[in-house]
Length: 289
Image (cartoon, rainbow, N blue to C red; front, side, top):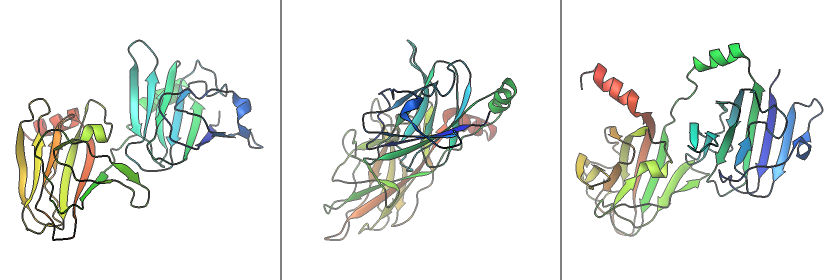
């Protein structure tokens, strides 16, 4: 059977919680009956495995999913609605079509943070036993490199003093970055910012720009329970990327720099890519680190 293409256009973000109800009759259908489109103005976020009656609920399906931005806070997940609340797989929702396997009883959760209308594309196909066996032998996801940008325009530098700092990052559709400009201090929980799964840590690199005193940039890593910290790298100059550092899930990242010149601001860029903890441990074992 050839796959069906389903597109859903909303006037606000998907919330990852509200079932998208209805039937196939709620969709506009192309002449060849292979393309279905629907506009939604109410809250939406959960899709059942029968896809509004277009497929039987009882068979496994290969589902391709794509969104309309590269905001790293946008997620798609296969969820089992059981007493355990089992999440089988979570992927970043991007314009690139990525594939997930859904089994009978699974649900597809869509959550976005674009603060704009969203265009969701699905390609859905029931799969045979042979196709399922081939699918499980393939690794379909490559962790993306993401960029966060923090700015301070109050004449001060960055400071890691104090407890946890939760900057109000927002997706900038022009720069394609998560950005924030606010006077804050403390330690940042990257796994909260990026809504990472529990088993994921991160490789991180930091760059400062417009520090008035060269060589004052620092990268600090802290443990979340005691807030014990260490200076992972010091002496960073303007526009110098730090060495990659590993931050475990839940660990904290601290930024420190000198102030900018009078009347200007200082900027910190953070490049980050998720990494399963097992991959890192295997790599360290192989190199006897």
